[in-house]
Every structure is written in structure tokens, then in C-alpha cells.
Image (tube, rainbow, N blue to C red):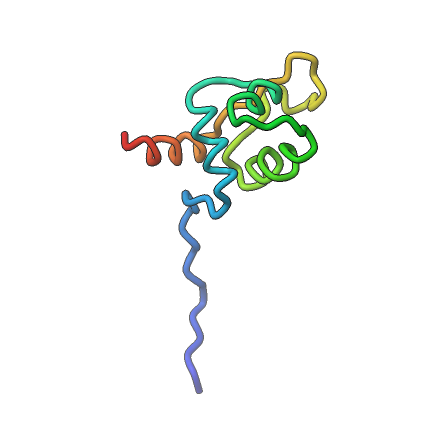
Length: 96
């Protein structure tokens, strides 16, 4: 009879971003709040759809960035900021 573990090991919280676009966006935001236009200007992109699909949406999905007004995604003064996970990655990137 083989012994099977009653529980599995937990996966450690992932602080590494596999996507370099996510890393770029985390570096840009830092400790501030940015609108989509401000982030696009800081990165040097002009195509909003491209920015949303390759940078912002993966960053939100991975838990590095959150919305200032999460209950109202199309809020006129919507800004984006780093989550605790995003701040930890930012500090790691800048060497704090």
C-alpha cells in the first residue's frame, strides 16, 4: 500500500512577472497613480488597443495593478496603481 500525502505543498506567491511588458508597466507606475493616457505616454505607445492587450490587462490579471475605482471601470477620473504584489515587484526592481 503506497502512502499518499494528505495535503499538497502550496505554491509560493509569485513575485516574478514572466511578461516583460508587465515589468515595464510596474516600473513606470511605481508609487504613483496613472491614467491610461499617462501610462501610454510614459512607455511611448500610441495604440490604445495594443497597450490594453499587451500591457494593462495582463498586469491586472496577474495581480500587479489595480483600478482606483474598481466598481466603476469607466469612471471619468479612473487611475491605475500598484497592488501590494506590484509594489513588492517594484521595490525588487529598483533595489530597495
